[in-house]
Image (cartoon, rainbow, N blue to C red; front, side, top):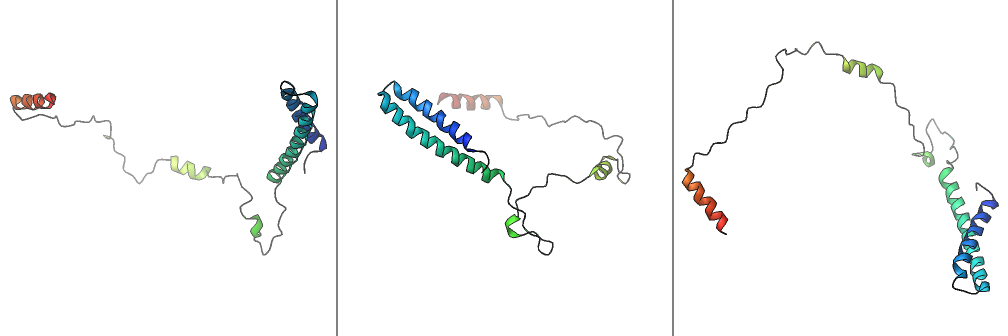
Length: 136
């Protein structure tokens, strides 16, 4: 495991002091000390668990031997290659105008001309319908 015993001791002493301070207001001194010692043991063990978890997460698995140019099953999916291939030539080709497409010179902006909505019904009939709908 990474780290040393000092980390666990600091973690345990922090738990002891924290518990002792909060316990002194409601309990006798010896009760507070006993609860502090129990808290020290718990925080000390918790520090071991944290160090173990950190070691498991941060340490890459050992390199598996290569068999016939292929990686072993244990190493599949454990490495991430963040390099991207050089695609500058392809990008430059995409940015160049194509000569085989005809260029339209009058392909400028034309405003949209939607059809006008005109009602061909009698205004009296429409007024009756609105009155009927507003009554309920």
